[in-house]
Amino acid sequence: MTKYNLALKQSLIEECLSASSVHEVALKHGLSPSLLRRWVKGFEKHGASGLIAKYSHYDAQFKLKVLQCIKQDGLSDQQACIRFDIRGPSSIRQWRKLYDEGGVEALQPHRLKESSMPRKPSRQPKASPALPADAELTPAQMLAELAYLRAENAYLKKLDALIQADPLTAQPKKRRPSK
Picture 1 (cartoon, rainbow, N blue to C red):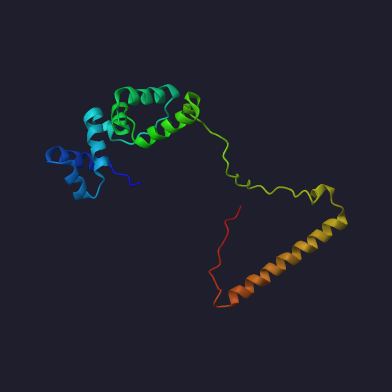
Picture 2: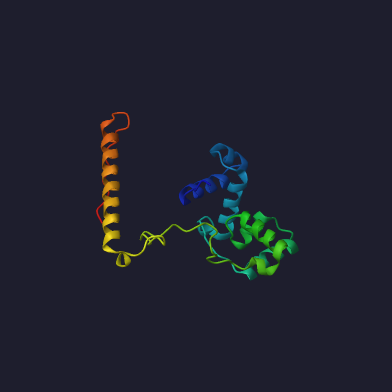
């Protein structure tokens, strides 16, 4: 979604008010006529504050009031947005869908639900359950692990040297920040 600054919106609204049709101004600037109409109506009803981005959380009673007003007064979603200072009709469509599926309880705001996405692992390495903690290792096990880690380190250094020597795969060496 493209964001438009307040000055541009105000200049387009002034142009609409002096022009013969909102549709002409919208076509001239490559905008949707309905979007431009919504800006004009919002400006007429609420002034400059009707054009500023608004991130509000509405309670269930407000949502229900909007839906009831739409039904009783025969308002379109656009008209309801202008009357109640709601930035977009998509919010109202979502509220209507929720209300139809679950009633007033479904209109309650949902705060900080548990995400279905898995969380990133923490930066601290966790002890592997297969490996005992360092305090539980015998001196022989510590020496065996030390030998393994030294061999792994030597292998990685050799691999890095081979990669750097090959001009096709050579990349500038990246330095890691020290901890």
